[in-house]
Amino acid sequence: MRHDHRMWRPLAALLGTLWLACGGSAYAQGKYPEHPIKLIVPYGPGGGTDIVGRIVADHMRQTLGQPILVENKPGANGLVGLQELANAKPDGYTFILANQTVTVIAPLLYPKRMAFDAETALAPVVRLAQVPNIVVVNKDFPVKTLAELIDYAKKNPGKVGYTSTGVGSFPHFDIELLAKRPGVEMIHVPNAKGAAASVQDLATGDAQVGMMNVATALPQIRAGNVRPIALADEQRHPDYPDLPTLGEQGYPGIGTVQWFAIFTHANAPKEAIEAVQAAALKALEAETTLAALKRQGITIAPTRSIEEAKRWVASEYAHWRQMFKEVPIEIER
Image (cartoon, rainbow, N blue to C red; front, top):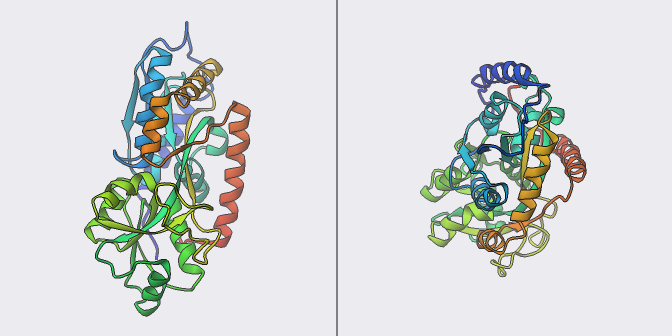
């Protein structure tokens, strides 16, 4: 299936213009921070990225002594959020809290549409947390196990729709890999508005299956609108002790553990990057933060230095380059 991404071309041009206009400058003056800090979330409200951003920002403002303004900028697999970052001065007052789709996958998938090299133009500040993905189905869909899902898809080729947060998002890759192993066909039903909108499609029956993070799926699971059938992790989740992993059901090595991390301009002042990193790490030590994240099934997984964050992001680029070879997705580049 081909997808029309013409809407991204003017976006890429604007990204390049804005990035070149503001790149290479330093704006920090006086003691940092002197005014509120913007934290962009490149998805709509209610998804895992938004949840983590608001929980952590609430504690960070106490440490930094300035408000952390969380702004939702959904669209184009998170590239609308990156546009917002590119539009800002690299003065250490604009950051983005994103996952692998936004800061690794999309830049690798659409290099010709990116007017800057995200791998070098973005500076990783700190990885905050991670959460495993979970395979869920609509409550009325007549399958209760992964084996039943595969069997149904074999008997009904092209009649099983799966949701994701957009073409080229990691849920898109995960489901394609899951379908590829047994050789079944499922239809992609993307929703670029974000994870909360994606799981809503599943709850209403616009799609039958999805693979999304536990935090995003939890409200609809509790409401009885979707049903979990597998966990994409090496071990079972403490909140779902009876839910078998994909590996236990014969599909090891499938499913992304979603991470959440803060990035900014590579040209942002060092003092700003270090201050935000320190505030974020302090937030992850707070009992209130830990309890709030735990309620969402999210586990902290902080990088402890800027150099560690850089090495980790480099390993993510290597992982996804390999994934593209295993799961080639037809995209209009």
